Length: 158
Image (tube, rainbow, N blue to C red; front, side, top):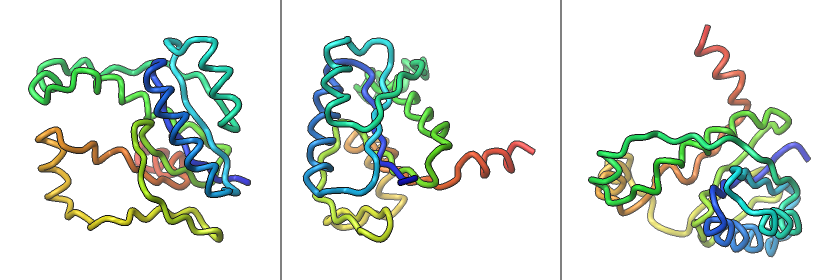
């Protein structure tokens, strides 16, 4: 299986959300791998527990935006470290990954033939998503699907 669902846990509190997400994905009897990216701040105990739910537990460096002013304006200072999710682009052993935030729990319809995630909610326009994100109501980057991203990045950087 060369496809995966990926999440990020930057501390022990977010590990709790990752565990709920992992268990909910497992309940759908997926054929795709489950991968959790963790930062050094995650305790040894939680690493062991995560390894019982996820196929891969991968430690990555913390990436902090250090954008304290905007994050304070949004009243979400903890979001500075969410740039750490960019490490999922380095998972080149997978042909396709779907990233889900650890604090996301959605009703999923999962296609057996290919990775696809469809929320059973009304789709928002890009403008509505941007406005909701700016107002701190949603993290519209929390559901990012990417395929062969390294190739795209390499082409972009040329």
